[in-house]
Length: 408
Image (tube, rainbow, N blue to C red):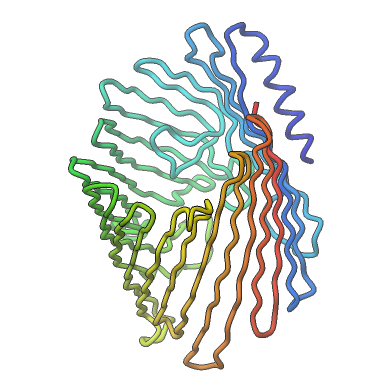
């Protein structure tokens, strides 16, 4: 399916539907993106042209409760670099009804209040006074190709709470493959704002081992921040990640070693235009295949934001980053500058220098640089351009990205 085929199919299917309802309103975005990348250390190059259409048709009935959503893209590969990723992809294609109590959706969708799962099927939700319960089920898009298939299935149920200071949900999902259980997991997330500048966030994923039926933590993210005013703030956090096993669709046993980190960061703004910030992080990787001396690392970062330097309208971010561990040691020094012109153009430039020291090989350095710009022609049209490059001791890579966007 070529780029214009996706657009033509969407409009062919959806415009007659929208026209059949006097109260309908159609909104959407159309993107044309071109990405080119070359590497002097290799004969391969990437040249990808992508067309993407996002379309929302709302108010298909008199009370505005019925809507249609489409999000699809097509990629053409003009380069010598090959990839197993499918060129055509449809992220969303669904019809939904949003009433005062009931929410119903059918098609390719993310279940409401559960963005970690996607299904070609149905989603039914009952909600009232900030509390809700939902169920979903159907086929799961192919894990690797993102195409429709009857081999994979997905079903689950969840509960959620949405209040002024609390947003929380808890879900159970079962994924199947050709009639067998491929994965079972529990997912929960919470955002809590008790007041006084305090915000707590947490999310967990617990997978069920299909051989022992024992639950195990797959991922966990916990963060606590305190911002008493606009001038200062502090954040403390922890995260952990493990690979999860697909029990029917995978033949190989995955390494479920743990990666985790603890971090602490803070910032302070003074004289209105200056903001200093710092972050320290301890990382560990617990894999049997990794040597003991390569399992730990410490990261340090410090920097300053400078707003409207000398009245020029230029904003700057200057920082230094140090990594010490995982068998290497490197330091990166970065500078970013940005400015807005005539409320229509955003321009930015960046540069960084990184020096690597390895325990088992020679040291090397990398210089990276970039330029970006956005031109807002009107409320409907915009243009974006980004150029990035980096050079090491034996290579240089350059990439160019352009985007033309139309909103209707």
